[in-house]
Image (cartoon, rainbow, N blue to C red):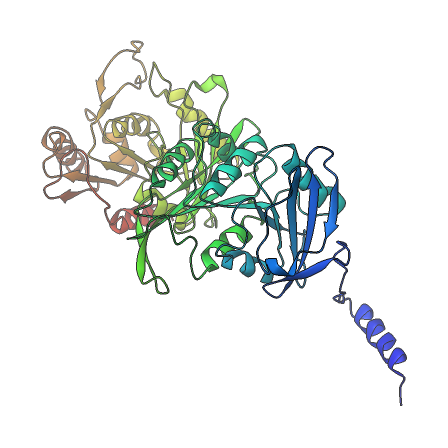
Length: 508
């Protein structure tokens, strides 16, 4: 019979020989003064508010899963340890309402997160607790933060003061101090995603809407869930999977910046802001949901150098680029109002590229050509699709007429076929030149055109119908899709399939 010790040695040797790393149980390093919290080891400490000295204690049995008020001049601190820590020692912490509806924290423990707590309010004591966990115990330098109600005040106060020390923020009916509200833009710029879960009848719902507006303007990622018919309580979601998934996914490294973009490009995000509705079976209600947890989210890069004015080149990057490096040259600015067409094209692997738009002079031919050269020098398709809305379609025509061999197709929504781009040979930079006078270069190059117009758009007859007649006379392919009852500004979400199919069929 093989002795037990010899058998274990044999197993370890075999595992090492096969190149498989054995799982080794490790001590938490927090000492022996522990209790239990929802089936996991809990370690308690007191911190001296003046000296910041942290001393382990045994939690009184009377506290059970909760925590008592600290003695005067002290802070209570808690760490709960997972059975097996996830790679990188991720953790989540909070500063109010310990053990109140803790289902998200329990779920995170099961995924290898540590859970930490310190009594309010933020200050040097919180900084010391963060240092204790990250420097002495090797926790991640960027924890997630959870804040319910006043806990939102705490989390936003500490994270806006330490934007480089947080991976994600989950706020549940959170409040925020007015002085911290404008600072939220700094968190957006530091790529800290937010998830706010609120009741539709909650008195602090306005805080979340104000934060959402700031985050959108700053290009950050914010997801909102508004539970219909609920007030400030109950907090959280009975099924915490969405919350835990959000926090866990925030630990994953982001996609690297495309090689053809240099350091003058600043990263933000592009995602749909329309509402969807999710049934919450355990609450028996629906939540109005919007943001990147519920909508595909794409990296956006904007050039910031002054050489291209206030609005420089912008690039939307697909998560899974299509073969052939396909792209769309978008004639108008990319703002927070997302395009269903662009979202659908991004999902198919297309890059969306907007050329610079100078504040005073408008679009410039040289800038568009420079963008085209940058993209094609980087191996992108020599024939991008052109798209635009309103008067920007006229700018697309102006460039396309002079570069017909560099265009695969043109798509315009309620086009106005005139603009500010100076045509070749015309030195007057203020000239307003109609661009439908001669479309023969496009027809000769076989560039197909698609216009989508509201039937009540005042520009329909004087622009699109004139261009359609002329182009077909030249032998070109020109299609018009009418949206009955719509004017110049298309209302509501439109199905982009026919438009996207047109672009895809002409660029592959």
